[in-house]
Length: 385
Image (cartoon, rainbow, N blue to C red; front, side, top):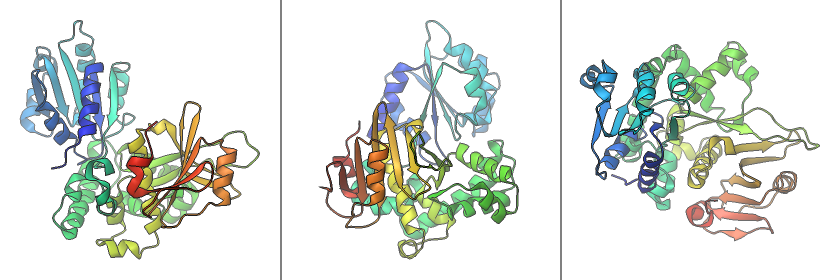
């Protein structure tokens, strides 16, 4: 059991400030477990409903009757199974005084949970929960977290074989069971082919035409598949940053498989030695480090970008917060060096700071505004802003 202190504190603060909290996250990231741990600490009454449980689903057959008298904290898990609950929650959330706070858990983005966005507008605050992070498992377990990914069952498995089998089962269940429940009507075989093909494009700039030709369908079809997997929170699209400078800039997103362990499973890499010999090893590490930086800094999706020009200059991660711009370049090396691309990014983007995250042991200054930061010291040397 790994205690998730930061997430527990975040959840407590959100429930103090908002009437309805939507905790979203991919399947098996630990949403239900986190809530169970949180409820052990509260002093108010609480009630839980798991809509995968037929008994709980039956209890909510008449949701207004079941919920209106409850006080304290009301938890509804797998809410995407019953979107008809959202109009009821809107009425209950508007009561004054309001005797209850509602915590709804779902395995999809707000865009996919359209009912909640429409009926609870202005009343719900969404919080995305990811798998385990470096802060939770410790930097000494960085390589294990990178290879196995952050899904708790995979990370905590007793062996590499058990971890790989767990992730293989996850992929199958997600495609055959979870996607249809989210209203995504694409066959499991088709979506598996696309998801696997997408893994080979991990860390690359999205090219609809190229992927469509490889897949044998229209550009709009592959774009729809990409958006569906993104909405199911198993794929990350990193938006491009572009502004009025003289250089032609890339305006298509980069795509990453959200969990590094699932990425390695899609590529059929059951052992770390298989990954280290694979041509996507560097891209895998890049996606993993980007995810850890974003989570450590608490950056929102609308603050996160990459930057690239058609002349070849690029920056792996750009975080824009207010008037400040922070750049991050990811290098799987123990001896990073400054490059012309870094200098162009620093100058063209007017960066406050550029950190080069590397696989070595030490953090050191490379130039006035460019610093090399060891992944082992990420939590200490890169301070949240």
